[in-house]
Length: 334
Image (cartoon, rainbow, N blue to C red; front, side, top):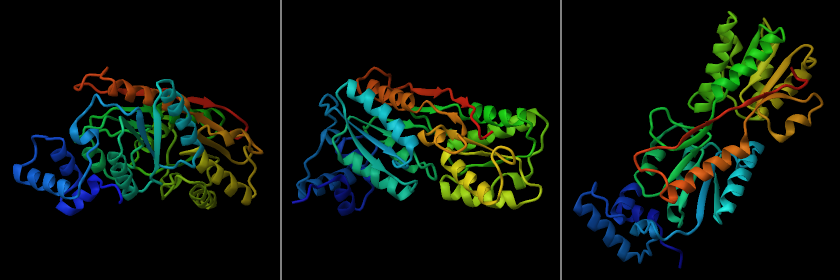
């Protein structure tokens, strides 16, 4: 017989997962009738509650959950190495989920994690909707946001100073003699996209350079194919940019391909700068200038912050909110 989960109880009782969690944890913010109904359904289904349902915080399982948006991206692979190293030092095991930047998959991944006997959760949120994180705050599961954060939500997070990183990248291109600098950015609802756009705009403004609407991609891009299509369109416009700053190295790889197909030499005709400094950045025919995020350190610090919370070393009224500093890595592409 399959294991009965809180999701099964929620479906049978026609309530949300959050409501089930509140009932099983004997939270005060749920009416008695609903609580009795949920407990009755749980009994009927022969639900075997894990430690969250009973609030047994001392019954540690030495297991952490990790949810990221694209585990195939070398950026997250490096971050997870940092998580793994830090967790291993304290004898924690890890469970992974990949959301593929899908809000529905994020909801499913969180429900899966809530059904597991975890001590805590690291999550890179999708950010199209903050409801899943709000619901997560209502459970007993400690969590830390990984690489992204919400301006309007008080949560634990470890991220990077992307305003600074984008400013450095843009200023570098300006110092190399570029005035027509285009920007291929990610979705505007992602915190790192907002910060990178802010850094780009600040640098352009500081040097009294205009930012034509045509120099910012019409569509947000996060993939190599997206960078290729967006760069193709930018390159075909008049005036043509002399440099392109990209949301990520994956996007930059697509821009490089588009430039070559258009007969442009890098960096003679077009400079390209990426972000993240993934392992492929040095392997290109023209090695990529990029902004290095301390990826393993990011993962390690997030894991350590989470384990401190699980161990009770952090006050319930305070939040761990760390920002790591990026570093501009100059190579031949600029």
